[in-house]
Image 1 (cartoon, one colour):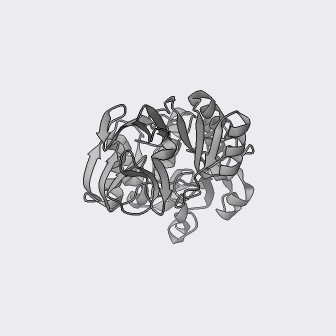
Image 2 (tube, rainbow, N blue to C red):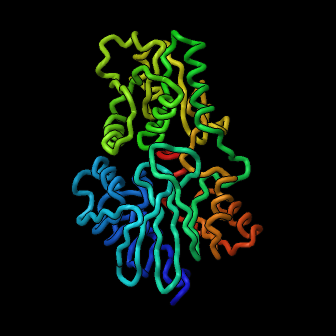
Image 3 (cartoon, rainbow, N blue to C red):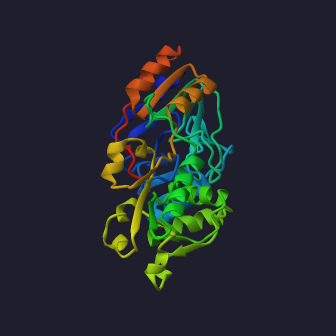
Length: 338
């Protein structure tokens, strides 16, 4: 039993590593779970043991409570732990705060499970670290050649240009609470936007968590603290996508609706969100970054967990790698982290 194909398999709970006797991002409660990051389709409550970075564990406590798992073992990047017959190390994945690749060593073979990851600039988390291995397990959320994400500053400048053009309109931006929200704020700050940024209450706790890890977001004001909502004309308000068109948003003055998501590259998705101003920002690799990563990791084999699996498997084979799809169930397509 040497090659990872003999100690990794999938079942109704997700991806199981026999060498560690653990599941990676399981979809059901299990006795031992390795969690790559805090998004809801990867991190769930109710496990026996959970292994995660300290940041991911903090996110899980916010979302699921202090007792989300019977035993919570925090493992910092590059620390090593022996589990069952193998060893586990976390390497940065560049996806969101605390996101990690699970590096598993067993019988002189190394398998790397990337989780969700990206390669583009993001000051809100540690950058993806290329880790040579025998088998590289990758996602393929944007695994088609049509997907090429623009630089984030270019997209956020669209928001600032609209604000200058329509100074009487409240610019309401839909952002996911974990990752996207903080990236948009940091991009605005780096582009020189120093005014307060107003925020729906559902986004506050995770922003506070980011700040507690030294990620400075500037002056954030809860919308609930604003006495006269008409004063938000000409201001930027961030809210969960679900709030863009509900009763809460109708209280805001002369709203310009924007949405920050990798899927905003697709016109139909933009219309679905009723976004007047689509802002293309993704926390996943686009097609060129997926291929770049495979080339840099240069494994013997590429396994694809979810997303546009067939296209990436085909391309990896053209690049000379053995490749296959794992077809994991329970992974979202843009509900929380796109």
